Length: 322
Image (cartoon, rainbow, N blue to C red; front, top):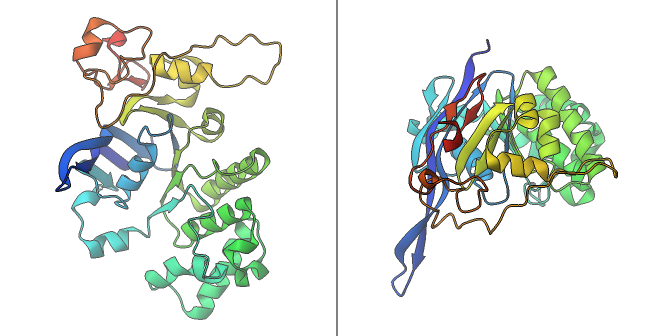
């Protein structure tokens, strides 16, 4: 059994809402509300959910790009939330991120060599010549050419820019990479290239991924285990085969029923959810999904279900299984 690389316990991130004449705090948006999970060395954990459910905020809170409100994040046994700025800077060598938007995440004023070598410069790795050589190697690794190093971001397509973002994340040989919807802005043909590249790099560089996405077919292709989030909370977590073949939570069932089937004659059994997603600044009491759940019971409206193991490492937060 692989040992845990990342342990997230009770992670919360609330954003204050200010309003009125004196801009006082009038409420808070519960973007991430008590999320717990473990990522083991060498695995790919997929995190899915609809827009605004807190997936990206979870990823950024783990790296402290956004400071968590509460909870602990243990990386190799050290609680990341308690580290000083200098300790955190050193730890960033082992934890990197690939951003969602390949257009916004690269500095348009810097050429590609400077963009990829910046992490090496920050951590004081290598001489100028060694850094230049490393950049050329990384460009080849991600399927670009070393002569691209002197070009600027605007001279590349979206897929090529995402490859540059991946090269930058790999520059310092990290152990954990948070992939924040790395293919959602790309064409389908380019998505498959980037996903295959990421799988190859995982084996080559012995990486561990937390792969955040809203496309269920993408997550199924690349993940070992999958966590489903709804309104800032983890509602189901299981191995990908168990989750896709036998989903337990009503929300997961609804998500999977919406995945298009590549067969025009197949009759999909669609499960349509009623109503809109509640606001994270005023989430429903009890189970946050009860306002849209077709199997809602009285207890769901008052008591919040805990994420618990229902057998074979399949975790569900639902009163149906209590």
